[in-house]
Length: 137
Image (cartoon, rainbow, N blue to C red):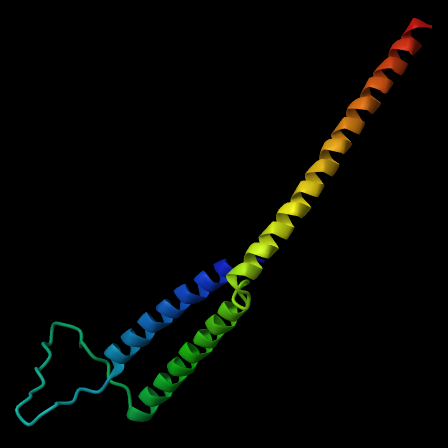
């Protein structure tokens, strides 16, 4: 499982991909209409594929509704990931205090590690002495 920040980045990337897919769906399947009385729709040439593949209005609206729901769902996932990031509910002072506590824990763990290394070295010296005394006999 990846960390929250990576999940957030992936969710934002997916949201952008969904925006692009939604744009292309609308661009490709809208109905050709004019905006004003002087506007005209240019006829498509026979040797070129049509620029717009208009869908029936109910199918087009159903597609738009599904795409909108997908965008909203992804946006809500992003909001949840943002709310679960550490430090959002803590002040700067609280975060600094937490860092100091973690540094103290790290120092204690480092002292324990150094003691364990020292003990290991002492045991190795004793083992070496024991092996040398066994070789003599």
